[in-house]
Image (tube, rainbow, N blue to C red; front, top):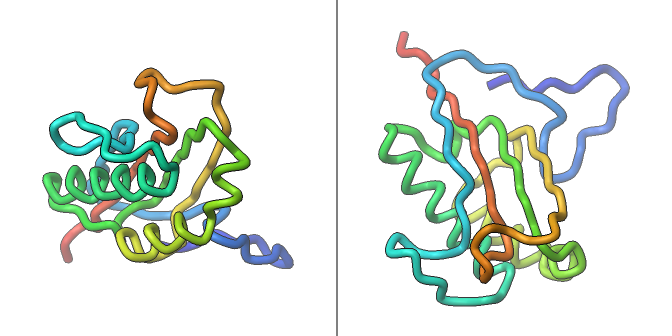
Length: 132
């Protein structure tokens, strides 16, 4: 994966402006903060982010991919203030489960998500490089 950073642009904190890759594409639907059985264990945003990221890792593994293959993430959050207040804990979970901050990333606040208890939904695109 090549991070795209135009000359003179500062490196963004926590994401890439763009990336360039080639290989097998994997598209992960929006993952929310419930477990594999559809049960929420917390209403805390950071806790739901951790679970959503664990769900993403599980789906990627099913497709033969790893977190390092993520090239794009879209985060939908219901509470910007909670996100800002819990950034350290969210960042810790991200680093533990995903690792790199090289994905092109967008985060938007939404009024609500389809599942009433959900506080975050994260979509992912991953690309597994071609062999050889």
